[in-house]
Image (cartoon, rainbow, N blue to C red; front, side, top):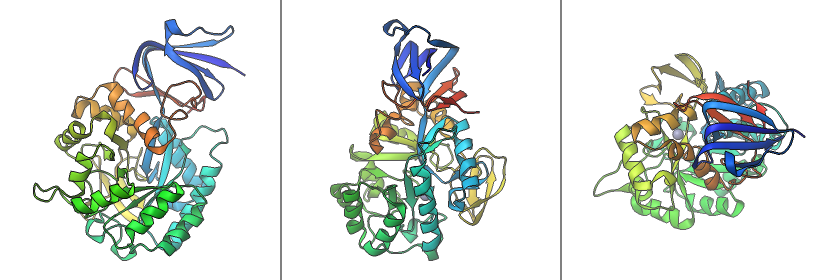
Length: 386
Ligand SMILES: [Zn+2]
């Protein structure tokens, strides 16, 4: 058993505490608070982080790949690459996200990911997969983005159960267009099984989105992107998300997917508690400009944007950059911006207390930041990421 005290100018629990300490024993946080409030046990190793701060490890509920590897490849080697790449940018937990492919390919990926999630408790130094996010095939063809039109299907309970069975209880989120025929039955089935339906790639009217929320839907996939546009006489799904505090909004805060002024509108409508920063990252994350494989499509990456045949195709943003962007785009405080990538996400996913917080008993997932919120060091369950 080894005890380490990380002492920093500020710790973000995610609330900001000046002159803070995070006391870690093996893979857990024993205590976190101000230096004066915490007594260090005899023999504690002290790590002084001068001019730096500590945040909880970031959590990404929407990621398709990184480091040149795609989640849909579903191989141990490519998955390891994704986990190591994301961890370098401060993301210590994620929900690997499948794309739209053939039923057989999705099922194969889901089976692979279920195994990966199951074995995520073994000690190592990558970003930990906590559950599966399925994006597709139950998306509206009208708002499909780059999801292949011939592979989008109308939802049926039978087909959904086929995927759920392959996921063996590890399916956490499914993006679904709630206006599709039979979508309400699927949503009810998901909620019964503890799977979180997320409104996305949707042409839902306000009324259709409202019905989904009444059923129990509480989140929206990449807010503004691949959604029926907001109209002042036709507010649509965007109007529903903006005005219902029960619904949390995924946001790709790269400055490409959503204009900073639209992000400001979201921030003003939802507050710092209503936004969940995601990457929607693809294999090109952490890589130079070029051409990358995204669920079999050849996607061009240039100047921070990923495109396929004129459509945006995922992003290369990392959550550390998204956090910095929120402070620049809307003037969010560092504590608020960090909350959007940590505690908000943990509360949404029902894992607060274990993830997304510097608090007694939580996993020792730590991100050490400089004064510009740039990542300096990362720890997953107490182990340094290299
Ligand atoms: Zn999408």
